[in-house]
Length: 385
Ligand code: P1T
Image 1 (tube, rainbow, N blue to C red):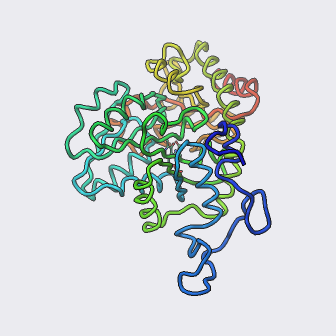
Image 2 (image 1 turned 90 degrees about the horizontal axis):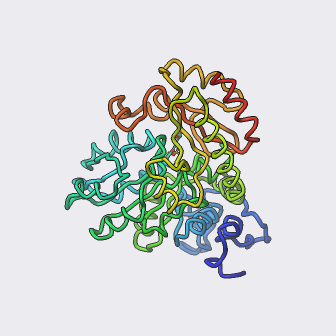
Image 3 (image 1 turned 90 degrees about the vertical axis):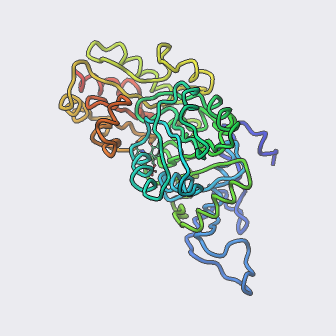
């Protein structure tokens, strides 16, 4: 086969890191639903000894992840949060992390309510102006955690600028690439050390798995993360590995439509007299539009908005009235979803903290699916009217 590094993204999603299965040439890797592997003598095995340490279906997924993110090593976990958990376990008590202040509520909860107890300090700051990060860095800072675009406010952070700042001081930079996906943005190419995914979302793409992923270029860092993955044990199972891999094979065609529909709906909402504000990085007047244009090839399918003069109750009324959009947690599947961050995905962030970053009670978040945009707009119209 052609050198895999030379493949275009649209071919990597299908072929990256993949070879027909060694046993019978199966084109899709079989679901190796096994916990263990026969040994001829202690240590005499064919590369697999126990499925927490490695499983061939998971290896196929991990190779695909490494390929699509332009990394060298992929690791698949039982959830996005398990992947984040592994990154934070690189640190020691006394270490400090600077994180975006607008991020998935579950990431915030993991940082504040689990890891602070173990003596790791987290600072949550707006990073739209990357230079501002410097004032929060001390000699104890070991990691910068970036989500871009952010969940749910769609702020965009300049990955290259943050990586320059981090590299100068030997600080690791991890980027949660869940919202953008590698179709839109490649954090490792922009200087990040670790790219993380809730593969539950666009990578899986069909709302049928909960999976997490990490990809890195550096071998030493990969070894440390692999050690944690195996030692802590929150691995992705073979069935979920298979489904995620199947999802990745259509990532590029799905993302193209997610981006097209996202644009159509963002523009529809922006022109609607009953809508106060629409958050979508594709708008020229989005405060980080220039950065978005330079580091993203498109703007994705995530949009947040605030209806005019609305309260908590009005926002709830709108999401309840939607019919084609399903009211649900999560995002990134083929079907459109609507959510109310303040009471759902971001409820674990104290109201005061949440509102500082703009997550007010009347904010509604849409994950625009790949249905016909006309139908999605008609649904929004009847709910808003
Ligand atoms: O749900 P899980 O696979 O553990 O991934 C956590 C996670 C991490 N990072 C981002 C940016 C995320 O959006 C998520 C999960 N988010 C949702 C469930 C949601 O509806 O926003």
